Amino acid sequence: MKSPRRGMCAAILFLEAIALGLTTPVMITVADVSAGVAVPIGVGLCVLCIVLSGMLRRPWAYGAGHLVQIAAVGIGFVVPMMFLVGGLFAILWFTAYWLGMKIEREQAAAYAAYDAEQAAGS
Image (cartoon, rainbow, N blue to C red):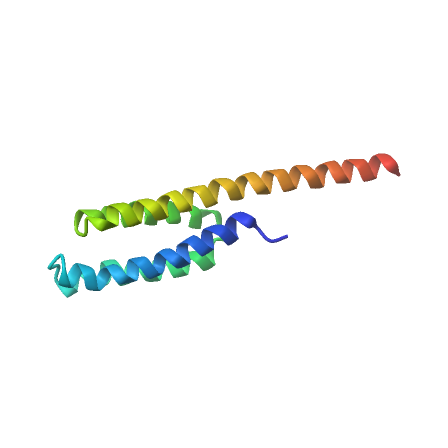
């Protein structure tokens, strides 16, 4: 069975990768951050999001995803608009995580009820 939490969180991380990758030229041109600092931060977080979106089969990857949300909001100290953009992605991430967990619990309960019904009927 495919995990709804994994699918939703992976989609958020992938979209966030685009936004974080685009912060690199903004940091360089608008915030006057040196390319030596901006590229590892912007591109590094972009690549991290893409890698994590594929690693969500492992429980630790969700914790790393939580840390990415903190880092995305933290870029707001350099590019103030990232407080808003990073905050929106953090809300989307935590909503996807929470809803995914809720759906997985409900599916597990439904399968357990079905199995109990089938066992009682035999």
